[in-house]
Image (cartoon, rainbow, N blue to C red; front, side):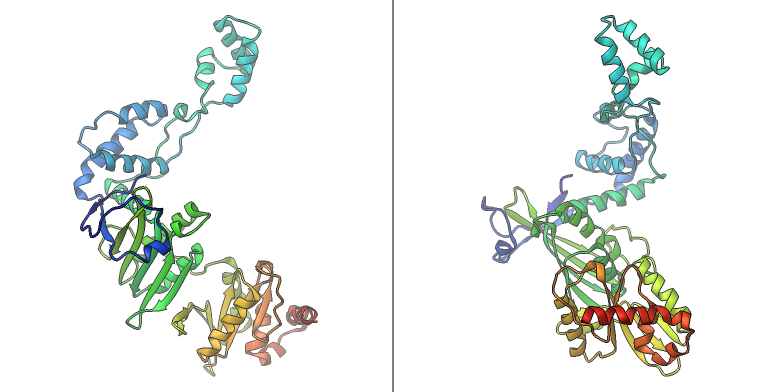
Length: 427
């Protein structure tokens, strides 16, 4: 899919030079701003005609549909926008081969019989007897697994012209973000969901405080700044845009490589652009978090578990703890962060940053199966190791040992086992 945009302004001269890179990008004095050719209400009539025509061809061969869309629709459609809409519709359904016998088996039988019998009719008759198929069905299924011979199926869900327009806008934006070198986002209000999404997608991101208390600035590496996994990373980056629609306000600026890779355009998205909001995120990011919250709540009934407490600003960056454990009577507070992939240096820096922010009551839970280096991590009183699940008793042993002593011997068993294993690791 090609990027669709019109130029607002053009400062500077286009030159055929070496492919664009972050180093060259930093040398540019000005970058022209792009305005995506969004689908609007004016496109709804021809989108409706396209949807109706496609519905009419459901059950027919893909090649027949390809011939039809080369002809004009009942309502005039801009060719570039039509190509985008067709690409989106193809992703909303999947063609199928409806032959009851696998085409590969049909071909094997036909070619085998053709080597013995030159008469075409007799070959088809013989194969029909062998596979319990009529000669006509045999011919139809011979190459039914080829893309153009597969059957056009209905859309996975009914789509209205307005919904299709929003999906097309998302595709246009995604095609540009797939060519981004870097992305800057300034968001205010409901920013925690954006940060959660960034972390879930594994985007390379640096978060810093904005100009106001509830504002955040995200600098994200674009796919064109990477050497591998660029297509997957590009999809992950574009999935962030619908999440921004939940913010009170936002501005996204993406410097995208254009033409043959020698020029750059800036994509700007703001609140009010035709972007469909994403579905609301689940309460927990993973089964590990959900299970820990449930089991710790049952075990420590005097402690409240606060999901996603306020971010902590330290050294010009943000730290986002996963939980805050708050005692209901004494108001004692502990922060808990669950780390995925890690190195010993990463954990040390994490603890150092929290100490710099004067946060002493922090528990870091690290997955022993996700260590990315061979260096040894000394056991810290506030570091809890786990495999597949976090033992809530191990956390309770840190935050409230008195409650732990009141547990039954059976409930204490896992804590004792954890302590012995950590002593063994330390030795």
